[in-house]
Image (cartoon, rainbow, N blue to C red; front, side, top):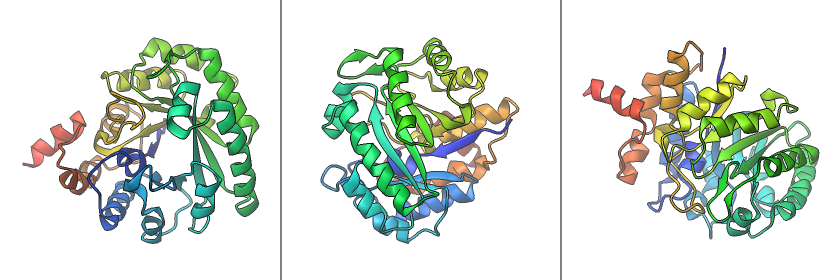
Length: 296
């Protein structure tokens, strides 16, 4: 079985880091990830520099990369799309949630209001890029940091609405990392009507359950997962949220289980080291720590 990984470290992993990462370092990071065998990489975001200054160099980052049909960018609204379309972009991602409280804190819109704007964004994007690819993020699939537990039927409602307005894929995000396999099963059963190749799971490892949740999703036939090199990232709008599922941990787990990722883990464990050094951080990934210790 082939597992498909969407690497989100350059965007989700860096977006709320306070220490500025030089543009050239970001470009080198992305190139190293690609050399390690990661094909789908979310490279940056065209969000307002006022809100996410770390990603204010989105245009420059893209200019430093060889264009790839599998590089994507986060686009928060029509203004962001207009900026993105000035660069060679064929894949965009849109961000909403299953909780009004979360989207109001995050993008100052209700879920329904975000979907209304996304419809316009998708229409404009399709006019410019008829063969372009659109991903829709659904955050807070289990719990919202501001409103508590989220009902499964509300998550399904948002998923169906995103497909109705034209997304090609959804990414289901456990934004604050509270989920356990039982909750993954409940949601997986509730979205049986959705083609599995159009669903990716985005787990955070805040409480150490990310790999267990991956195992549960695999058991339901899902094979697309978001992850972040070195476990970088979290969510600036979710107090207490820890890092994303580390790509190194995901690769080790699925390959040790007899599946394939196409990723060279020896190259992967080294790809994030320059960025970690700039941030003054140690790897969050247990696998990265273990393998790097053998090189010392």
